[in-house]
Image 1 (cartoon, one colour):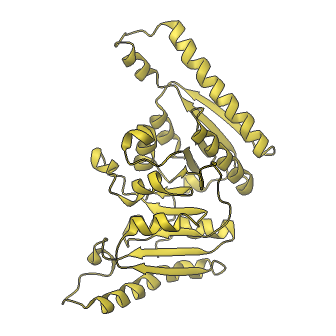
Image 2 (cartoon, one colour):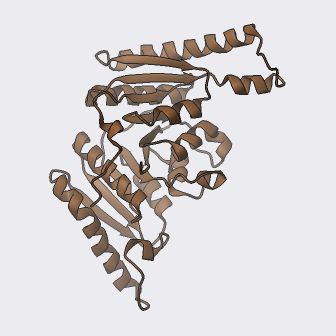
Length: 306
């Protein structure tokens, strides 16, 4: 078992829960979730907003110097968003140490930088669309290239509520990325005192990466039995480390995205890995993690090896 669950910096007592805000309904939902988590875990909450002055300069036609009035307007709006988020967080968790940060950088650059030393990074998302434009470049950039764990808070219903019961569900593909997701999922299930559903869909993840290459063609029932055995072996070390976490194994022949999306309707958290490849390929909507942050019905944690 890979015992390196996360980089040590993410586990330091000083590592905060970082939440990015922009004044939207999805942002408010993320603040609520982050504030509650901070209170439960005894973590400092850092509320941040990136002004993205470079983009503002581009919109103004590439002026070398942005007019002072424009900067003041952008900064005033950002200050207002951060202040509102702080008030909301204080209402939810009055005992939590709350700090704020307003940066000239882009939101994605700011959050990716902070993710290096954060306990985890939280972002909000609303709606259920199938395009990159809907979620925006910030969310996709941070989930693809952030360090440690990034949580996209999605509502569980049309009224913008967040489910606080149900199991933690983890998608496992047998790769090092999958191992990081397993580690995070067990830790979350333990902290939340709930069950863990370990899901593996073997036909859409290359069999050789999970159970090793087959020397001869195997009948489907035999292959499924083998996948169940390997999944049990992969989880064994973690069940020993977390003996109080009830684990249910689910092996499906196909459809990891559909299966995980369906489980998100009853889960309080879904955990998946992200390979975080560079360039456009790192943002492909066909990947399981990026599909879930668009279509999930509960908060989705995207983990990366560090």
